[in-house]
Length: 327
Figure 1 (cartoon, rainbow, N blue to C red):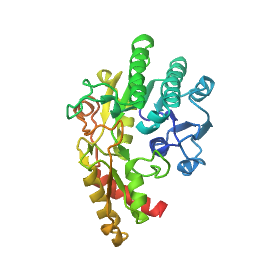
Figure 2: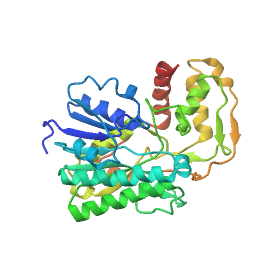
Figure 3: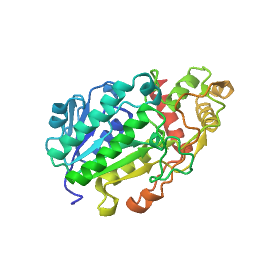
């Protein structure tokens, strides 16, 4: 494929946290970007720097409607499928809607992409697929039993993608995201991710509440590492890399106590009082796995992945963004 040729990229869920960052990045690389979103969890303000760009098209639609998917893929070279209902607790509260969006919607997008003959379908998979497997680090070929409806839906995505690759010849690559964080991640709502939620509480001088004793650990992954992986997955010319699944992470783990320590340290540079805020602890959350750590060897070997941002480096940037945009 010629690098110089302008590419047309459909980003589903493009008004969401990860999707909007992908929209901005690929527009900056002189591509044409089509965003499909129903704004169920995404936000129009996430697209404020894209909306007037001459190479940007917004389609307000729902992946649960096959006709919306068919419209969105017309003339598209690549699909970066980010649209989903995230959150383990949300899926425990409402498994039916989670399944409708994450499984039926995913299948609609696969069918539309197949029929439109797109070059490649890159999709957001999830570290939740590792389920009750206690092995660390997590390697792509060893998974356990799912611990939530959300985890089931994301595993089903991988199975469907594999079948579409084998049966219809659609090139697919799945990216198992590990605790992604960074600019534009929503701090509000019942299912807000832990980092933006803690940042907002600390900025408002509220005590963050950690589920459990704070010793659960995660492979916190900065958004720019995720952008790099999406670009590599979209453009790789290694035939052995295609029709596979990759951990998308930094390859290091930090406890929630570590996380809070760094957040207080970085935020107190803007507001010294934050250093003295006490942390509260509560019961563990249903469906949570104790520890998560990715092996990124496969992505390095097959696609040349080289993440640039550790958790601490990413947190510094994220904290600056939150302070300047949400204070």
